[in-house]
Image (cartoon, helix red, strand yellow):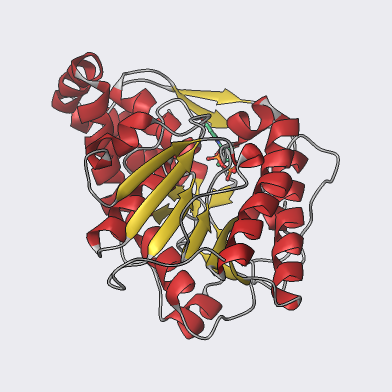
Length: 346
Ligand code: UDP
């Protein structure tokens, strides 16, 4: 174990995947409460833009590395968050072997560092461990319905294997491991081209392109705003005693993809029509978290309604995508009433 030399005020926290969408918001929140943050990222899906404002912060250190090759660090750690993995279906399927290795070998490397320092460890797991669920809403004791040889398996089974590794380390008394099962999350700093539903629909509406809906659009998801998720992650990492069981973190509000598209059009009015596309293989039909455990163990529940979170996210995309995207939106805003009458399902 490395000797701790800190002042004892803040903790030293390693955030793997700290330049990603969720990771960068977590880095912000940890620095804001006075922790020292070591961000490890390979930029496969993370971006320097997300952490640029932190670069000159005295409590921030950046290490550019893939967690599959990250197995030593020269300062002692109090906490380790593992958020390092591509998480949108097109991105995690782009290099499925690497996705699986990130989940298993990468998580193994980070667990070894936590074991070295007696640090608490939080694994970002996922609602994908439930696959296309046969039980609804999903409680943590539901064991899931996953196709272990399908195109989503690199992520679903990778994250399931990572959970197995985490709980073996916990049972063996080798690391203080906590596991969050994260449901669909959205907000500023999502990549505009990550292929997920909320980024796709908002960017399409803002730039006047057809809204892509896969299948009938009657499949459901539950969407959690990123600030709510970060509060939940920190609560799970800090709670004493360790709950010792996986905990769902997500917003239990459930919407069909068609309902979501209607909300997006209400916020970012567009004349563009809907382009229906085939449903991807193994696309789950329904998803909604049961968050009783999070309420009981952490006193946590999400606060930001979808309409409000979508508005913040739309504002951020408009600011980020710049004037090219903004022009059509301004034009379309004038036509808002008629656009919404026509509706996205016209
Ligand atoms: N989807 C869609 N249009 C898009 C992107 C996604 O209709 O442009 C659907 C997708 O088939 C799924 C849901 O929206 O049913 C959520 O997809 P996402 O990729 O955001 O995440 P998932 O929950 O499937 O991991």
